Amino acid sequence: MGGFFFLLDDIINLLTILILISSLQSSFINCQVARLRVVSNYEI
Image (cartoon, rainbow, N blue to C red; front, side, top):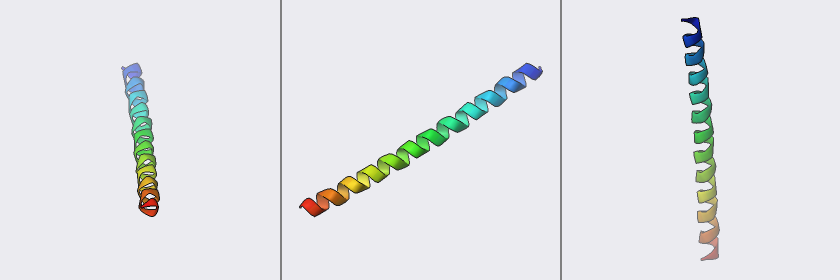
């Protein structure tokens, strides 16, 4: 029974890390998109 709870804890930790990574990636992509928009606005 104890092993199952340890496994559950590991899964929760992995999910948390995955969520953090995906949110970081999406914010990074948003920054890149905003930068591209600014650059294209200046070029026009």
